Amino acid sequence: MKIDLHTHTSYGSVCAYMDPDQLIRRAKEIGLDGVCITEHNQLWGQQAIKRLRQKHNFLVIGGVEVSTDCGDILVFGLHRSVRDVFYIQDLKKMVTDADAVMILAHPFRFEREGITDLSSSYNNSKQLRSLQKHNIFQMIDGIEVYNGQSGFQEKRFAKSIADQFNLSATGGSDAHAILGVGACYTVFEEEVQNEQDLISQIRDGKCRGVDPRWNK
Image (cartoon, rainbow, N blue to C red; front, side, top):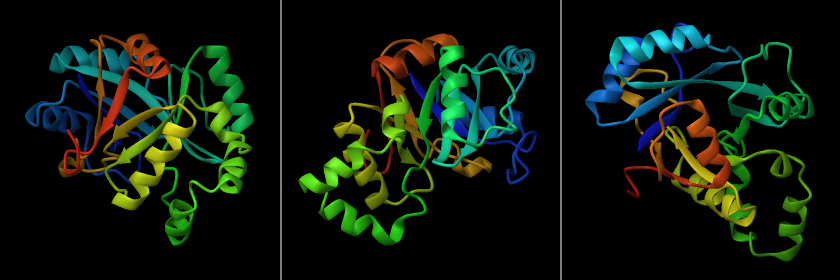
């Protein structure tokens, strides 16, 4: 199943330019099997998600993109407000209590200046030890390797990190407007019918991110 794990709508993200109906119609048009709506620091109600699924006869799952001191985190399975959450340790506790999952979104977006050096030194044992000590990699369940707004070098480095830490390598468009939907997505090995199916396969590594421009 092909699911875009990272999208935004004007209903919950002031920076977005499409409404949920436009998002879903576009996803169906381009052949996706589902979408996750992940507004910035704002959760969709479960009943609202259910109404969207029924209206369009299409898989829609609610998530959230949380801004933390360690970067943006996509969370699935959490149904409590995250408006006052900033520290990654606090988010991790909430996620653990809810049996939810965390994915580090576009992890190197703001480190473009250093990606070349980091990538070239990736096999250096000192660099690996330094990365292994970073708390964030011990807390998350996956890394958004393929983000629709990230460059090739950024994606390649993120994939290396996901492999090193044995984390699920996911994909999502990070679409804020219609034409961005499906720019990247995640392929799940088994059928996803609901939020719990999604969580289980992310946790078990039964998924892989895709950028249609570079891989299938």
